[in-house]
Image (cartoon, rainbow, N blue to C red):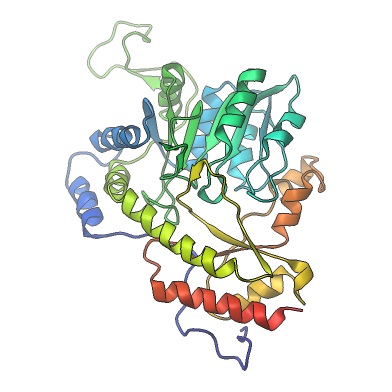
Length: 395
């Protein structure tokens, strides 16, 4: 077991996780009502959840789906990604942002990040565009919106599909407009560590009716009861499979939890901003730490808070700092290993050195606790632990 520095006494006795869901009595009541209803799988609560997402974001259509990964997969499918197509994305993301391209037979192409915002750099996107490029998957890393207008212009110029991976950014606004209605597709994740949760779950938002209808088929076996699409005379309960789809449906009790959570989105967002403000104030005073730069267009609801270490000012590397902070009972993660560093991608032929900014970032980042129920006392304990460890290891 690791011992805390300065004599082995940790900053606090109880452990602070890096992320945690918040479930209240109203959430539990909403789920219980569904469990006692005729519907457990996809039903009226899924419809209600989709309508609430559209109401909050301004998007015309929403498709609730089983998780954030299937949301990305559905987007690539509806966008027509297929064998021979290239899709540009960031390496600093969960592997699903690139895997979804592989699921459809396409090829992920990695463009480097901006070294200050840590989001994909529009200039680097331009450098990667070829005749085979079909789409851009831009990830709102940590919750900060990507440079949406610049990326939309690139897509317009080159006739590309814009998929905004907003798994981190529900509640974020870009130029005052909520994330969700800016791109051709916007995908959300509702995993328990995200700003709102359905347990598991995801959604795709779009303003394009054709994309919407394709994704409805995609999430439910490619089967339809729409009389306009049937080849035989319909009768009660009759349906046909007209495409190869999947069972990626959301349950009604997940949707009920999601709808209840959405009612608290502003509350969740405001608390996360308070915590981020406290962290920013504290860590901006530590010369050995860099904090993420935020673009003026993004009013960010942050899913992750990440500190970047200045390795040249410390006696040890990131891994040693991580272990020391963990020993102070602070829960941590590293977001993320560059996607093409994973063994599977190495076997596909991707080589290290593709995106120098992303690779340098990975070596120096640590994700620290950020969630709605994190108390001020816990926030100050985290700050104290970081100060303690940095002070011990500074040159």
